[in-house]
Image 1 (cartoon, rainbow, N blue to C red):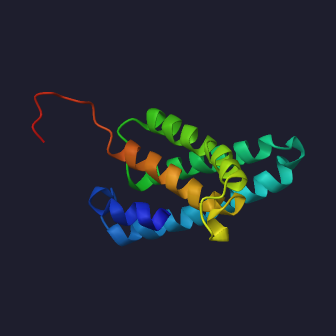
Image 2 (cartoon, helix red, strand yellow):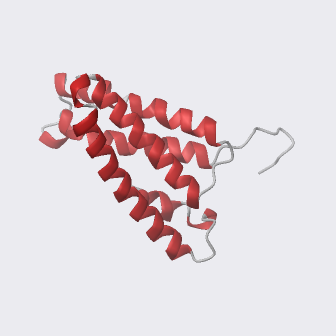
Image 3 (cartoon, helix red, strand yellow):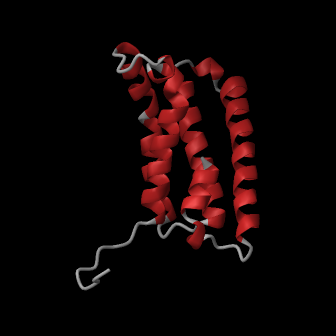
Length: 141
């Protein structure tokens, strides 16, 4: 996902060497994955169902912060709130897809699709955060 975010916003990367920025973002995403999985499994596991929500929000917040290193958000806190809110919707959507399958493909029919749903929602939140501008009626662009 970090590669998709970096490449789709290639012109907005704040590093002088764009390839360095993309590689840094990919490396930070791998570190975030390891931190999130380690934290969710080892520390938060006794919390039960809330573990998944907290782990998903933690991953989204860390991904937002690492993305802000190479792609600056105009309003970081608003972007972080949007992305965290969207990441909390992952588990209810995955449970709904598990209860009401929409496809004959098993990887799209439930909790197995969590990665796809999380990447889609958090990626959408990142896109909103990066491209957020205050509406100006005098602006013709």
